[in-house]
Length: 139
Image (cartoon, rainbow, N blue to C red; front, side, top):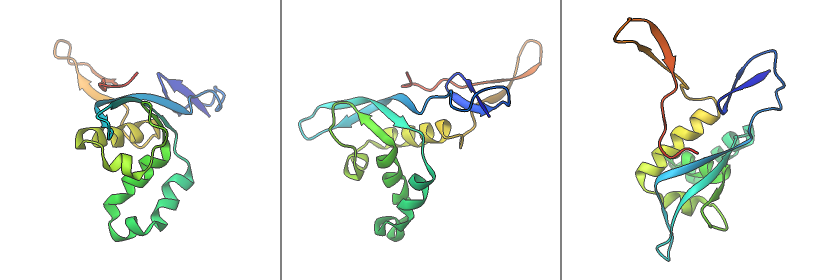
């Protein structure tokens, strides 16, 4: 079962597994610039399904260049970006490298593939504890 720790699900047998968000808001550091020079920064990303991670592997673009997997994957799970009508691989290809890196990290964190906390040591008492890093651009 899951419980929510801020926004992200973690194992906890005492909570209902249906009580965690399926979509997460984000704000891109730079933003996607469309053909009319409009910047799109605010967006929504849904949790990935098994199909989201498996089906892109059949895409010829991914088979020719495995690095293209992230482009297809993000185009499947980003449900909104500014006022754009559709999110497709061309949109993801048009992102600045900083925004692409941000979205890859965001995807990993909301899907449980990243490290949600950092182990730190207090400089005063030398006690170890964990903190969740701040991620600019998240709502």
